[in-house]
Length: 156
Image (cartoon, rainbow, N blue to C red; front, side, top):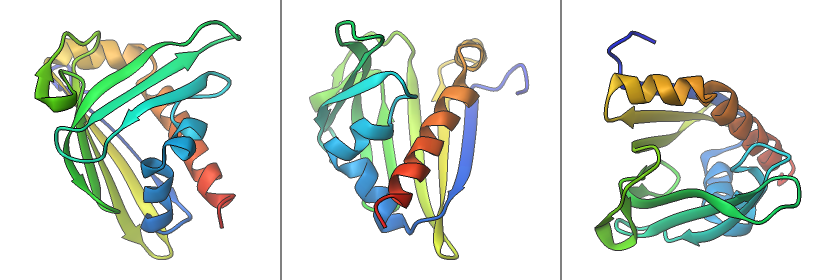
């Protein structure tokens, strides 16, 4: 990553059509199964897929209590094609102080019989992007995408 870049990206081919990948993203009980790298448990609190709609998940490690994971607001929702959310707003466009301010652009592009799933994550500064990278962006987001691919494979 260039020192001045405020963007991180990751993409993978998923051997399932965009409709199936979208369903795994847009169904709360499905999202909970792959959104956070195992063995951490995920609870989906809000998944209101519309501009201004809330997106909130909790995580639980080692059988402890659920803790905040993501609180965000959807900016754009195009079924089976694109999702954009930001952690600097909560449901209803309300500003919040995020522990890591970012905007994520998720795309689902048909590629042969599968989907090119891409995440483009924008940060306020290059330093914030480096912090996210050092926290394990590639490993964490990559693991989640791998879990998504395995989940949709089991939905065939």
